[in-house]
Amino acid sequence: MQQLKRSTPYALPIKILQFGQGNFMRGFFDWQVDLLNERTGLNAGVVVVRPRGAKPGTESAPLLDTQDGLFTVLVRGLNEAGEAVKAYRTVECVQREIDPGTGWADYLALAANPELRFVVSNTTEAGIAVNDSDRIDDAPPATFPAKLTQLLVKRFEAFQGAEDKGLLLLPCELIDQNGPALKKAVLHFARLWNVDPAFDAWIDTACTFCSTLVDRIVTGYPAGDAAQIRQELGYDDPFLVAAEYYYLFVIQGPSWVGDELKLEGANLNVKLVDDITPYKKRKVGILNGGHTTLVPVALLAGLEAVGPSVDDADVGPYLAAAIDEEIIPALEMDRAELEAFAADVLLRFRNPSIHHRLASIALNSWSKFAARVMPQILRYAELNDGRLPRRLVLALAATMVLYRGDVIELSDDPATLAWFKDAWPQVDSGAQSVAELAAGWLANAKLWGRDLNGVPGLTDAVGAAIEQIRKQGIRTLLG
Image 1 (tube, rainbow, N blue to C red):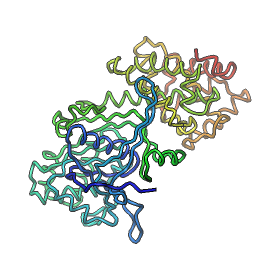
Image 2: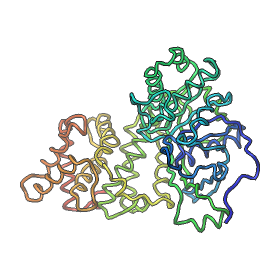
Image 3: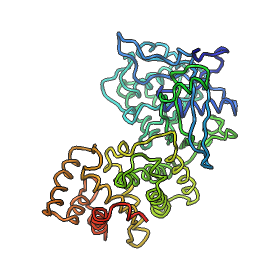
Image 4: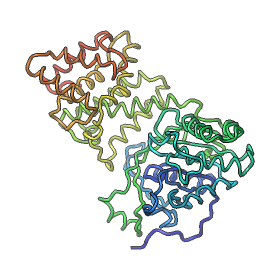
């Protein structure tokens, strides 16, 4: 079968430098750039740079260049009306991909391109990291920020510090305040390398580092559907990625960022905001917190995946009520906006194209619970004169029961697993009560940030819920 190739020459000016060639950036960022080019005339070409290049003496994995930078995004899932959606798009905005291990000079040459305006990155949570060993003459240095700093220094020198040749940076790594974090990393290397102090001033005044929040599930190539996809497309594309229907891109930055990206009239779910914090709390509370609330309850109810759990006659209404009545009231944002987001989340959970195993989400459940659900429990109690959110407390108790270890194979930090491995046999033998089990775990200040036995009624409520789960089964408690 024929390969995907361009029928017309490359034509777009290079305006965007993208660190990261993975599934997510292709199915999220490049897909949006392609739509902006079509709908608003952004007219932006992308050069993709691999954050970690091939090691000397080795060949890199195939680049997008093997099919002229083209690739296909398959969007499938449920739309706002709950209807199944399936659509292919050939993304044409990527003009080239560079492996810094074999094309370092080509990478640095981009610094002198007067049309370059944006830098976007997705290099994993650990990507924005610094060291004291990368040097200014390394070709290439090890870390992403050092690679970026070398390019920015070259650009500063090429244009003699011209203010209008600064860049707009949109890091998409999943860390808080990723914009300031990347700027701090760049300045670290500038000082380590004794770069002209005027460079620091140029970074401050000519370059803009925006914090971002990104949200879309991109699953990569759906190998199980390969034959059908080839038949429907009429060509073979090993770079194809499948993405869910929903996506959200939140950018914290000045209003002119929207003008430069030509967002007006694009009809994309991109929000330009003054403060990204409420959106992060919304995502953590409803999307991530919804997962963490669902998982232990659904597993104890005998379910295996997210979609069937949301459709389950007992578990589905429990989750919807937990989000609507206990999580949303604890979040400081417009309720209508929170409800709309929650409706999208439940549709995403039901997406029949994604088989999301509960056991996979249960990885490191306790750190997730501490970050995603416990803040809502405490906030709810604060807002309701000490009354506790019954369903979220049940999820807390269910997680403790899950860590008895007889439902799934648990994966967590060794200290946590050891604690429950020691505690549950004592409960089973009668040497320790369920109430003592609850009190012992709630006293874990390293996890919770403080001893939660001080929260009025929480220890008793968790202990009682554990007893009820053990005696009655989880399903009887979900109404």
